[in-house]
Amino acid sequence: MEPMKPMRPMKPMEPMQTAAKDWWPEGLHSPASSGSQNGMRYAYFAAERRLVVERDGAVAQYDTGEHRIEGVAQSAGSDGPKFSSRDGEIALDSLKKVA
Image (cartoon, rainbow, N blue to C red; front, side, top):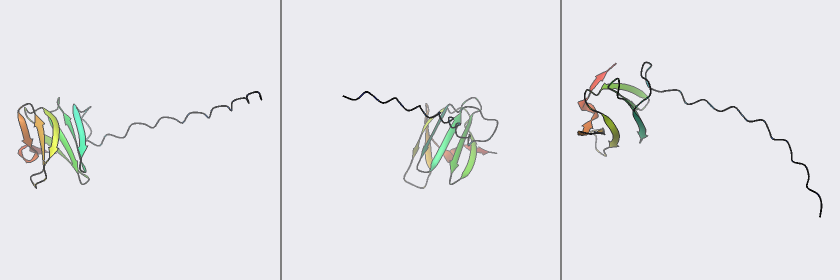
């Protein structure tokens, strides 16, 4: 039986990649919920009462009023995504678009 060969030294670790840059407008902090589906992504900011949606590279911001967004469900029809809240579904086009 041959003796074990010495271990090779470990390579230095690569630095960690920084987190992806936030895609929503500046001034909004950490989203309460976010997600993506079928080429669309969203981020909901409860404190600011804002919903930010990116579709086809365009970012739009909506005032959610008293709604508290919890998730999204895209419909197969042309009426666009619907967001779920404690009060039920909310159609994106029912929210007031801002900046």
